[in-house]
Length: 433
Ligand code: URA
Image (tube, helix red, strand yellow):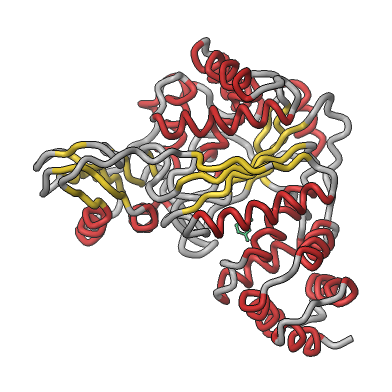
């Protein structure tokens, strides 16, 4: 078999056989097939797509390219969730403790971020001494004892995705439904949980720019999960504006803590109640979504959800005093309030622009080698639907850098203000199961 024949076959829109996909995955992981051929193949997939059978074969082969985590020694149903990523997305840090406080076991492996802001792991690292590299034995022990662990992926989980994702990142081949679906699902399936909830975001700050493509991605991933007998469901959620108010690593951890203390912004709270209710149904903790929402509201009100986060932080060696006293988190040198030049109603807060500006303030990485400034970011004071007057603060920028004038101008452009009242968009648009 020759890689060039597989490339031309896909270039011409033909179906690739299971054997050909195996030849490609094995050959690339072993280093027998060079990056330039794989780049061409990936671009052919971007343009010609893959059918369900091809995607499912690719996912299974990627999943088996490295370790498969066995969670059998954890009692009960193990649940996992995954977000396709967005601006201000600190959902895992809120949802994990909420559902674990309701009795569901969460064994979650997360990633780091590239672009906008950090990933869940980067955010967690703003809590001093918190360990995220935990070996499998301790990870399983923690989930059994605490009911919740969020850790870094084991070094040998889906090596095929590690290589492919790094290449896609620099060859313009990230935005492809077959490639995103196989990348996400190979990692989720290899992580060993019984149930998977996918939070597929759409809008300016997401990979999927519109509801239709988010729906297609969600359906593709749900079908892959089901074909491997995992209870896999998805929600399609709004990423036209940032989620919650905080964008930036330590700022998002602080917002997660406030949310767990029942003082969170309404879009984040609603998302966690809806997603959490589905997870509780999947985990057979409750039998209806309504029952789930009530249980989750209870753990927010009685402090058990916040307590669960603290238990996890203690188990992973983190300094829990930061969670009790948020003023201990370091603040940035420059804190700049951005005021509105116009009165009216906020109709849009361009999520991608806000994410990119947060990154330029120091909150994200341009390359994997970049260091994140944990204190940097943006805190919104207004959200879509809010009324604003001239001179009122739209948001606050926090940075240790001194070159922020152009960033301020760009953030201001991200706020679209109109004369007419704007209705609030729902956060969860669809539930797919
Ligand atoms: N997240 C992933 O893990 N993979 C993708 O391809 C896109 C987002």
